[in-house]
Image 1 (cartoon, rainbow, N blue to C red):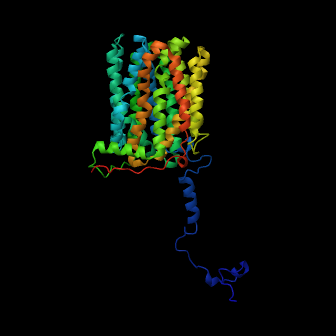
Image 2 (image 1 turned 120 degrees about the horizontal axis):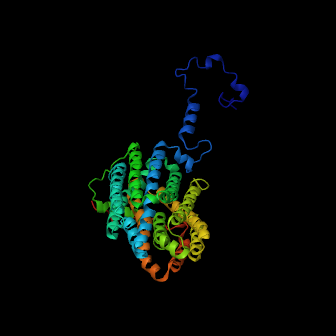
Image 3 (image 1 turned 30 degrees about the vertical axis):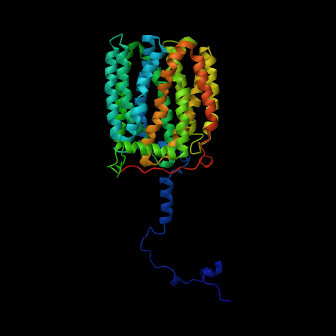
Length: 462
């Protein structure tokens, strides 16, 4: 048997090496330390920070660009919700009609149905920061016009609808860019935490906006609209300062309609995207009517009017913020595909309880829970969609999301308004609860339990 080589010898054999076998010099003094240096760099640059794991709120907030944009958007959203609740309260005050309140809410968010697909195409074609900044400037300018009209003391209803429609159009065009910009601000592994922060900030503004509107309501509605106009400066400055590398598409010759159709095909052939968009579409249309009909429901069913309405709406926003925070902390970085299976039935039961309650105190606790389950669901769906879609089609798919989530809510409010005027809010809310409960049957988003991805059956035009 041959003797063992030095490499495979026992530990004792290794010490038989003479000094001549050892290196006499090291050309790179850092070479021996390089593995340790690389390990340290990996630890610092990765998401495996002490006390943080990928996908959590803390991991998302560790990215400076995201922190700035999120802070600017939060400040702007506070002004937006000051204006939103004041606007629907003003619409109810002027007409005492659920149908007109539905019309105003449709003017505000209805443009999502038509303009957000165009915004999605723009988001995949041009620098998303420039789109957001331009659209925000338009919204701020129209809010100034809305303030001037409101200072009239008795603003004509048609003027409110037209101005709000303009604001809604600008919002619909920039909404896909807002969503599509997010993955450029954080590590992709921290995307769920970033979505949770955005959702919590959005709903935190639902809390602070109404409360601040109540505090300054003595100044008049015109000043509330003017304050909102000023808050757009924050988001314009934050987005403008963000350093984001945007690579324009190489297929510049492809027309906008072909781009939009490609986005539709992307959503249709992917079973997870298809199910997410289907759930949020039916949920928004049928189960979220109460959001924009809340002034009339609060007055007729609970006897809540004036500044007390702002507190009720703030309770809803506080619960919604809690649901978003749950997704970014307790459930951060974990699979979210089964969240709808408990969020949908919990929402349905809570909505049914709100439909029957006539106690103002109990209503605040119920609507807090309603907001919690609502945004637990929506944040899970939004995060799943963001994680599934590729960057090339992100803007167009986010346009479809905005149609399904934001665009169909005012449609439901518009359709439900005349029904509520005739039969009251309880039957309408119960119908929404039944729809939410039925959606539980398709609430599992686990790709392994869904049909296989279908390939495209027709080529895109040149």
